Image 1 (tube, one colour):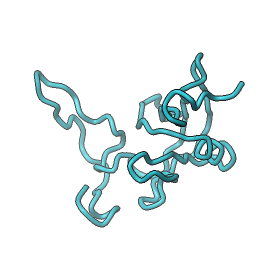
Image 2 (cartoon, rainbow, N blue to C red):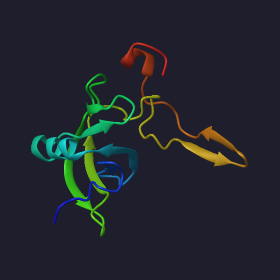
Image 3 (cartoon, one colour):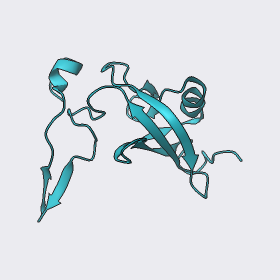
Image 4 (cartoon, rainbow, N blue to C red):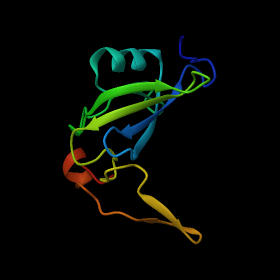
Length: 126
């Protein structure tokens, strides 16, 4: 079975989940090259839609994702990466997970404490 990269202009969504805790850490996209690099190296590689290029998670932060398992959905158009995160978080805003905001009434609030200072990691406010 091959992944179906035809539905989103050559991309598939990649859900990233902590292998031990089950927490969803982030959602990114992969093209065929990023998927191949991930499968071959064991480190998560994605496709940056804004920069139109491959993006190796942890390139600038050092917060890499070691892939423990790769699964796909029934339509073969989404992947689930179970990973072991290296570093205090995956979010460029300084949180363990990109899903740190919770809806309270009509407002989104940060419901967690930052696990690292993004300015110190990325060299500027994020």
